[in-house]
Length: 405
Ligand SMILES: *Cc1c(COP(=O)(O)O)cnc(C)c1O
Image (cartoon, rainbow, N blue to C red; front, side, top):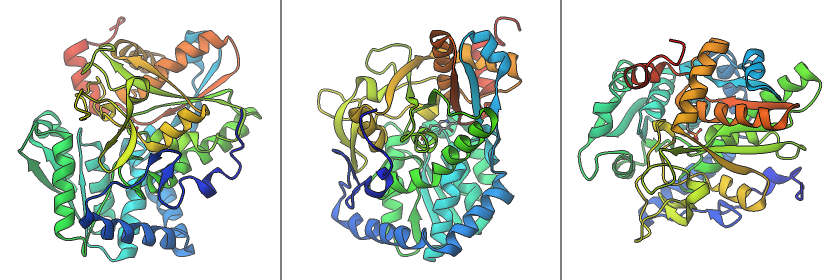
């Protein structure tokens, strides 16, 4: 390892939100003021003892943290090589890591005196987590969602409504995530006084990539301590799936200064053709999307290219600026798993461990199984970002119950 990461978080990102050449804030003038307000409030409030103590208490008593780290013995045996350990974010309240940053963002909103949380959602996972946080704090919640996604992700729409959230259908353009982002930004701009925009991953303009990373750091802090307690050692390799990159930054952040390999796994979908995958770091070029610079899948005009993955939580044509920086520095390596490998890992984890994982997380499990065999010995820590309850009907209807079913 070339670099020294012991002071990394003190100067990454820099004061303008740059992670090396990535990140920043490319904003229309009317958003500059509101973003600065969130930035300044975050720096001040998140360091106060009251904020820290309240977040700590929420994590313990409401979210059920710490989530366990688990030695997947049968899966390891099946893979045949390194021992595989799972950080069980699937056991975090609402079934994924997303609530870690949503509770943080909503707590910040409360301290800032905001009354309403606004966000977009694609598959609905971020919407559900944010609606949960809004209900907890007694805040209003408005989630913008493309009409196409509303039809596709019906159970999550029902969840959001049960949690008291207003789901705003977005009817223009392709009626999916990109239009929902624009719509949510417009709604936020109409009333930045009383509302706050809450992003769903380590993406968007500064300060969001930093803020969401900081709220997700708890995953890595817990996992590193638990792993050392269980084994007396550090893992040889740490891995997570990368969509926007929040669960991955959460676990990676604790191991940057350790002698472990770190691998992010992107969705290769149906293959490397344009529109068939969402492997941004592997096939993308630097560009600007949604107010920040990152590796991005682009068409000839430099517009975001269409993306696809079996796991809808991973299909975003950009990725977190910090991942781009860590890739260029050579500290984190990025690879892919395709739909087939993902499904295979999904079924294996169900059958061999009694854990139904999210399709997103299954990408990291697929890589871990492949790598375990290649390594022959040693240990791999996987961030199991979420549970697969949301995916079971889709899988059963389209792919059946696995080879032994
Ligand atoms: C949303 C989601 C992801 C992808 O988001 P990241 O920001 O890349 O972590 C991964 N896993 C699960 C379970 C999700 O819900």
